[in-house]
Image (cartoon, rainbow, N blue to C red; front, side, top):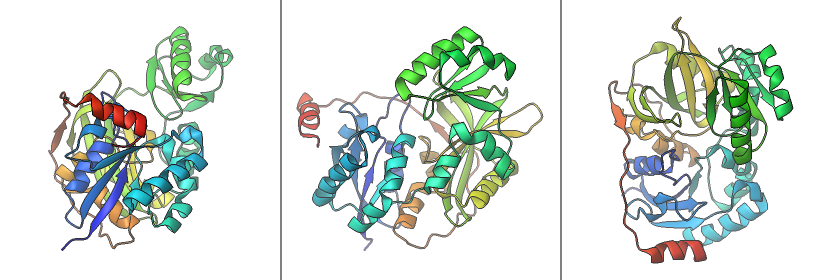
Length: 347
């Protein structure tokens, strides 16, 4: 009989800009190496995953990352007392930093994680991407960080329009004028804080690759895809797994050179010359991670096994031509459930 483990998962906001949580949970439900109980960790009472009882046994509110590690640990200790968690799989960039800091403390409680090191997390930040590209010999766009509106007029000395205006953790807008930069600066900084990153705009076709590194330079998994449908928020609403040696070579180089530990997503642009430019490194699994399962590489399952110090053999193949097409539907839930999660913090 397969061992039953309890995995806590964040990122339950299955909205128009979805978190990866539901896709991760679907993958874990299909794991062949263990049975799983899922404990959801939510920040808001209207995160749809809270009410998907066929996927999640129980959900708890947790404090926002900005509230500090003390509050987080107190809440996780309470949840662990109730649930006896085996593994936590975080799915938002902003929550990784505090969880990396407390990973040893969690391990002493019996809760395992498989996360990047603090050095890995910091050096792939958008603000550090230019230096990252130079260090590891990977093509990246020129970019610089700004902290105020006063720096915007001077951008014309380093960039030609359009430019991409990015938040530290999330959001990206293409600005064609200085005035648009001001508008996006205000909007993104109000939501995600400073700095704001201004990045050279690269025209081309968008590709992504998700994968898993073992922390010692070996590639456990890698599945590249081409975006087929992109929303007005720049999110892939459809994509197809592809065969591309250049992408796989870049991915293996990234993992080997950085000794990457954990899941990740590389966001790429293929320019007119056929070269791949690395736009962004997300230090966790993407919202489209379920495509990896459809293509034959259950990356969430492999990550959980690595967290539990189990032997995991690298995937050697994946299926090309597997598509994901995202959709939305209406769930009907009783308002009493909303009141319960809102008032008691668990459901």
